[in-house]
Image (tube, rainbow, N blue to C red; front, side, top):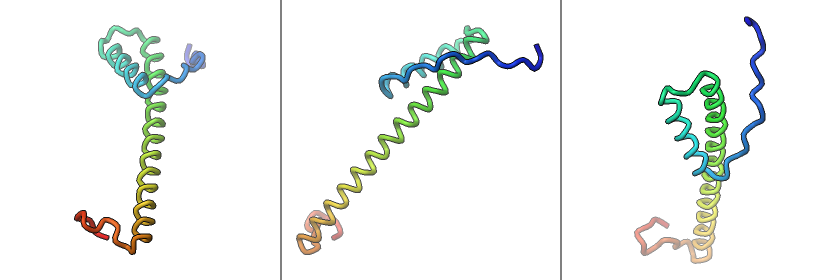
Length: 98
């Protein structure tokens, strides 16, 4: 009926065990949607699941990016400390600028 509330989405899907598992499931969802064989309700459910997986993957990528940034900062601090301890000659002789 017009103006009827949408059906509840049901319980949220559990988080995938890994980025790779989420990515593989997303690929399966895309294949199913591209096949044109999914009915309306299944299409809606797949889109909802896919959105959750995309959000999970984005969060995983952000976390990994943050970890890489922290590693780069740690490396920079170590190089600066080594340079200060060595009289500012960090990287000298390796074609790097001090």
